[in-house]
Length: 434
Image 1: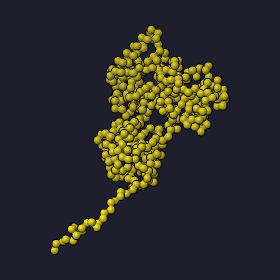
Image 2: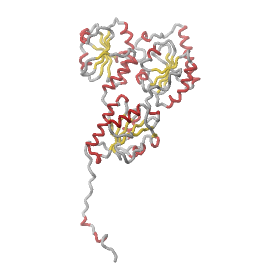
Image 3: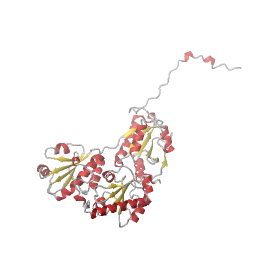
Image 4: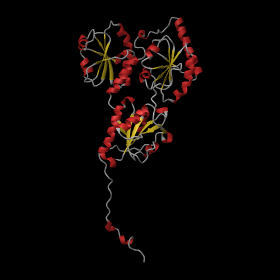
């Protein structure tokens, strides 16, 4: 099994290592509320440089044990944490010092010796600041102004006048905090809510909104939704009764819940026909996996048969939409280089392959092209089972530009009629010599 396709649940590090595996549910407790200096690697399981760093990172953690905390975040699985700290490439190493809301980027070499030196220099600075009374403070809730990024303008101020129009009249999902200005828990929540609002706005392309209602001013709203304590957070989805938010109160918790709501509420991903090279490159390079179907020629299936196959794909795209994979299809024979690179070439249609363009690995659907067959294929890929191979040529193949399918049954090519009266058959036939 090629572990490249594995959606690593346990990450690179285990309980026997001195590296602390961090996630949205323990990050606040372990890191943000800690007095310790933390060195944290944000990685992705598919990233070769991250795999190379693993041994040095474990060595660093062992060397600094009891002195500096060393952690790791699978930022591919926990996108909310990576997004919150502006992680755009892997691996990214950040130093969380006195002000945990504003970590510093580690810019040094990737050897354990260099990383340990960098950590000890940061520790020296932290101690020096404390000696001179310039401590950034370790109480996360006392950090001012939203701390780790986030803009107050991204929290929508909701009132008796605008609530119905903005929230109830929206197709989007809303998380609404009902607060009172005098409430201590509300003040603690404010920087978390602000930071989460900005991250959620960006990561859901403005499809999930965070709002806030001052329930002491807008008592009509507070009364309508039975608000009795502060802060109370409610989730509003179009056409449904509001439900109480039951998650944690850190920005990581709020972002994770918002992303779950987004994927539940989002339409299934679009399925694009491979019309040119841009369609293939954009889809396969933007997503961790791109799922490609090669459907039979239109003359073999007609429009009804083709639409049946596309419908199966749409159902599977809906089922796996939380994975954020790309979905493509092409007609048999239209992209022969692509078929050859995936070992499909010329038989066994409909066929399906899943490509990981970062490593140029692919897996082929071995079972039936049906909901059951494709579900088993994708389920196995998502847990690291199933065999994979390298894409032929080690790169995305040449793609022909083709006209999009018009949605109709195909037409047989028109054969030209010949007028046989002009042909002197006697010249060619019947001149057998005796």
